[in-house]
Length: 457
Picture (cartoon, rainbow, N blue to C red):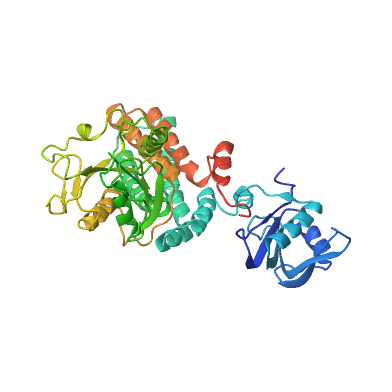
């Protein structure tokens, strides 16, 4: 049980380092630490101590370093917490961890320290997720945003929305419960006005959350097309280095190759895929199958065509996809007309049709900036976006669901005037928001979130 178990884990990254930390949390933490250090520990005082073990012999010295004791509830987890700070040898840290477990602790699950902090009301769910986002930050802005969320910036905005929804629910419920009043509170314009103001507040938070999610998680772009269209050359051009093998032989790329880059602080995960065509080669067929899986999960597809072989009079999207290779998901597509240098074409961006087209040369780099600016534009990236917070896709879904419930309630009010239906929609709106901070989270959701954390966090 999490309320009685004492857990332990190595909190520093795997590998050799100058310092390594083993963290312990739970009711037996102090007893275990004083047994191993053979001394009394004072709260929030750095103690130099020797770490002893009963293996391979009694009172064996395994390391020495600093020990810190944080009594609950004034600790990260809200429980008694001990940190052993010793030398960063994986062998030494493992010996220390084994001794701690021999004294009564058990190995912590991934994210269990943060999970206990959430369960003990030391932080809400969005703050707990911000810890993982901070650790996994790939850009400076992502780290700053994650820190803002960890300090409660995102939570405060969600709490403000929750308070406004709650106040409106109280008003609507009162109007329903007292129908004998002479004033029709649902028809006096107050509810409609408050609903409109609330929708604007929701849209503002959603825009910030979308920016935070983009900076935190990045954009997944899949480069697709027929063999020899220049897909691997485009990957190399965007990455700024030769990451993919480029040859004039069709079918050179046979597996998925992913490269993480930044465009003015926007993380970008570029995926190069095998050329899409009919092939009798079993290895190439597997590469094409994997390419289709990547295409189905992309945020945007860059469909590359060869300007020297493709007729540019009618770049019909259906004709450009090879047979049986059209994505099932409605993923946005940008057509990349490559090899403009060989076809004597000028680099340009065309938005005349529903599908944008960018004419460029991956070989010379001409038009590459047009593509970068286009990717930032279609994702709504704002390089000057200060004061934002980190967010995840599940947060966006929750806010969007809340807005849908809110708009449904507005429809019920204006078309039927049914207060009971409006009240039910407001409840759904409230519940969707509660999923973000954990007020309405299920055990399954908590398990999924914290299982992605590092062990020791």
